[in-house]
Amino acid sequence: MPVLSLTNNQPFSLDRTLSCGQVFRWDREPDGWWHGVVGSRVIRIRQDGPSLTFTGAPPAFIRQYFSLDTDLDTVTASFDRDPFIHDAIVRCHGLRIIRQPAWECLISYICATNSNIPMIKKRIAHLAQTFGTPLKFEERTYFAFPGPASLAGSCMSALSGCKLGYRSPYVVETACDIADEKGWYDSIAKLSYEQARLALMKFQGVGPKAADCILLFAFQKYEAFPVDVWIRRIMREHYLKTLSFESALTGGEYDTIRRFAQQYFGTFCGYAQEYLYAARLD
DNA sequence: ATCCAGGAAAACG
DNA sequence: CGTTTTCATGGA
Image (cartoon, rainbow, N blue to C red; front, top):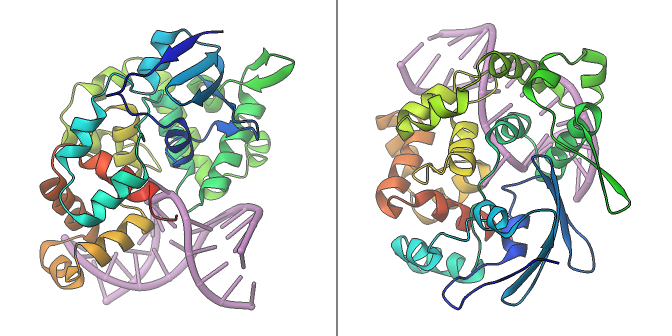
């Protein structure tokens, strides 16, 4: 079974990374093994101190997917500016932003609006089980996330079983757009952060927050700073106590928070966001 | 029952 | 133009 050994200056926490809410297709067994589907691969992986043991993908894929090539200490040091974010960095030590497949990430965050994480996971699982290709792996059947053509041609009765609610037409419309346009990923990836953000928001169901999540998790645009209800609370309480006054002058509250974070935390503010988000509970 | 959750579209002034 | 309302779902 493939094993990957982490070096001393390569902090990584599999649990923090997979359970912080950035991905929705991983589950942890009581024995410490995680299993998930990435593309057409079923992957099982566990961490014991500095060693990662896994099946279902070559080491190079694991390294790329979990961003193990990122110099995490340098990244976190770049926004370690005050005691509050410092505490989040320490408590979520080893959290890395995953490089997600863009199409699945796009649909996932369309399904995520105004929902909690368990509900999002159920919806994605429903979509995969209803429209995805079955994948047999070690006595169990998993399902690949369905491609654009599958969702574009989905009948409404099957789709309604996926419990997407009012998001169903957004998913189908976006799938139709993507099914036509082959090079959609490259055409967005080559754009600047702001331009890519506008391009993503042209898809039905993708607003400012979803666009920032997709840019952060699938396009490696680390200057994205998604503002959900948790982050808004945290930012208002710890960084922008005068926000209600400011945002009335400068326009939308979302942009006020986003631009403050970009200036305050710097080029890796998306990473800072993820540490604040992951540390929000415990 | 009421409120909330990795919000966005549509309607409204 | 910025601000409020509506939307479907399940858990607390």
